[in-house]
Image (cartoon, rainbow, N blue to C red; front, side, top):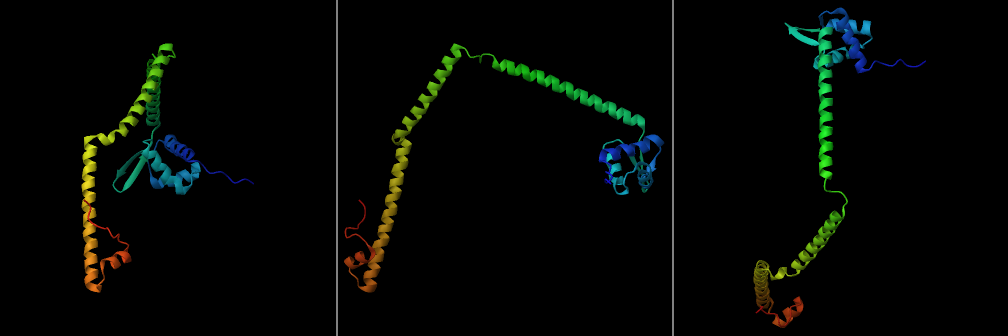
Length: 205
């Protein structure tokens, strides 16, 4: 025996709307919670959720009076709501058709002058040749970049900085050698050999 399939959300919404349309009455939530399961087969646990979804979609009106909430919906309002929705959809459809026509016209206009003519083929070939020439010129320009005055000045400054750094390290080496000679009475050749310092080690010119 197959298991009975439950109602979908849309089926529950439709059946709950029947309660309002058939009775044309005003209800509190507790009333709907009693009627919906018995008359329309809507599970008690889902009554409040279904009712709220109808209120959110403006299909059911709701008003708080004192401490109680009252709900109602009349066929005339539902009919008008459907008419408005149909009108909105029809307008969207017309707008979509108009946009389609506009796009088709734009595409047709963009294609003008792009036919595969002999002149166009020649121009495209010239364009490709110019692109290749531009690439070669950029490559050639890069070779002569070192002659750029700004680049030359930058290289000169880098050389100055490098020379100053070498001089500082040379100072440090001589200072360490001087300290080692005083501390351990080593001579220069022994210190140079121990630390791999060339015999002709000196400041750069």
